[in-house]
Structure formats: C-alpha cells, structure tokens
Length: 421
Image (tube, rainbow, N blue to C red; front, side, top):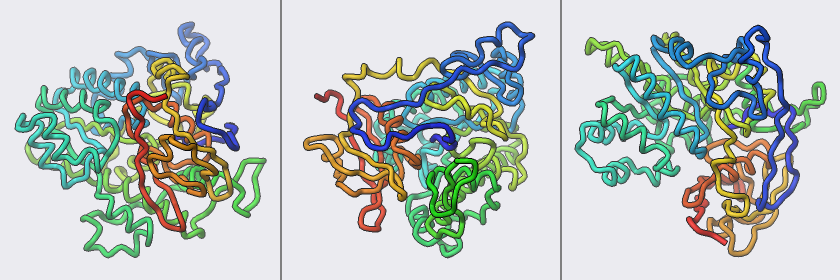
C-alpha cells in the first residue's frame, strides 16, 4: 500500500480504462566515490536487480546484502499482494537465505491461526495441492491468486521448512472495526494481548492513508491533514491495524519460542503486506514490545512507488531490492483488466459515481455512491491508489474490495476473467 503520498496527484475522476500513474523523478545517489552507484536511482528509483541501503543511499552487492541479514532472528519480506514480481522476488530471496541459514521458518499473513494444522499437513506431504488450497479455505479467507504464492509453499514442502499461520479470523477484525479494540471482550480476542501503542509516526502515516484531506483541521505547508484519534472511525481503523500487527508479532514470537524449546535456532521469515512494516512501524514495533529486537525489514521497489518515499525518516526498510518496470510484466494496455467505474475523490474517500453496464464492477455488485475503503486489503487515499492496484492485476485474478454502503461495510470480489473484451 502506498502510505506516504505527499507529492502525488490524484486523478479526481476517471474511468478505469487506461489509468494514470505518478511519474518518478530521477535522484542522484549519495555515494559518488562508487561509480556503480551512479545508476542507483533511475526511473524506478532503485536499480533493477540490485540491493539498496536507503539509510546510506548505497547499492549493495548481493553477498553483502545477504550477509547483513544472515543472522537476523526475524526477516520481514514486504509485498503488494497482487503484484506478481513481488512474489517472484520472495522466492528468489528465500532461496538465497535458505542457502546460508537452512534452519528456517516461513510464516504467512495469508493464513489465520486456526489453519495451522493444514499447514503442518502440507509440509509433511500429506495433502495434494488441491486439498491444501481447499482445506486452508484459500478462496474464502485470502482470496488472492494462489498461483502467486504456490512456488513458496512448494519450496517449504520440498525443504521440510515449517510454515506458520500469522493472521486472525475476519470475525475479530470486524468486531474491532465496529467497536474498537477495548470494547471487544478478552474472551473474544483469540488470545491476543493488548498492542503496544502506535508511535506518532505510524498514526500520522495511517491518518494520511485514511484521510488524505483537510477534514476541517487545516493544512500545514500545503500538505493535507487526515483525521486524528478523536475521530471514532479513524480510531477504530488504527485499532484494526494494531490488531493485525500484534497478532502477527505474537505468532512470530511464539513460533520462535517453540523452536528454541526444541533446541533449534531458526531464522523466521514472514511474508506480509508491506504496510505492516513500512518505516519499521507495525509488526516491527509490536515485535520489539515482545522482546524480539533483531529484525530486518526487506521490501521490493518498482516504479509504482514514488521515489520521494526513499527519503522518508525512518527509512522505508533496512534493505530494498529494485525490480524492473512492473508494467513490462503486465498485459498490454489494451488487454489489461478494466474495472469499469467512474470514480471521484471526496472528503469521505474514493466514491463510485457510476458503473459501466456489463463491466466487471457491475458483475461484482458495485453500485453508484459506494465508498471504496480498501482494495486488495490496502486502504485507499486517492483514486490513483485504486488505479495503481487495477493496473497491477492480471487476467484470471480476483480483487477483494471493501466498501461502505448505506453506512455498513461490505466485502465484494471483482473477478477479472482470463479473456475479456
């Protein structure tokens, strides 16, 4: 999810037939003594196929990058769920890390904890791929294209690497969204403890995602201010993020403790959405609160992410891997899936103004005046956020959408056919 968007222009209203994208501005590297770094920042911000240290503005050779993470207890691999190249990078990175630290645990945001027995059976070779996807309730729980994740699942089974479920059931998230964390009885929290308070920077980040408008609070230096915790809906939104963060952190800490009790010293790799780790907030904050300090955050970087985010403080990640222009790996513009809606950015968020007849949006059940809150589980601050996600979709994939209609939240699935007009 694009969490900081100070300099990006939203498309105020458009049909998602061609889309729009922010243009990245080339930036120089801060290490002129290394001639190789002169290409560190290109149109995609980070040189494709190279590791980049955002804190020191340096390109790293792969051996040096891997050496930095070799002994970390926890390595968080970020992703945008629907972008295939992010998953390919996961596969490459996990294989490299396994070669230097074979005692490994792979954990996933994609699975709620109650699915853990299914993961154990999969790694043990007791399930076929079809049985695994069915018993893990993939199409109703996670919903994203399973083909993006399956190579990593097969890698875990081939190498007898334990897989750990990190997430919670949607029922808990729905309760927190409606009532806030404190109003949910402890007996209904799935054993999750109280999250550590969100740092100020995290609150500001989430506020920009949630609001991205004046909200009656004025502006500082021309930058729009989002809502604060005095807004009950935003406070619940923050509680939801913290619930996810805490749940994944606790599952991680528990898996490590269990392994250590068995006399193992594994490296745990967690595959989760990058919004839960950007700038060291989210899951890293909760892990540190639990006493797990040796954490490395790794994220992929392509031209869909604004270059100015590289200059954020704290940095967006410990290490970044540059990807080639993502759009080169998507279908031609004329063949890309089209959602088929007219959007408008209002003070409340991204609103559907009209739905094209016989479109994917109409089939999914979108209606005029629907407020689209999240796409691919990513909060939307601008119409351009939704355009970016749509442009990353491939034919044959599904896009979960969370909308608000008549004051009530609802989840629908936009299914992009393999062939379409």
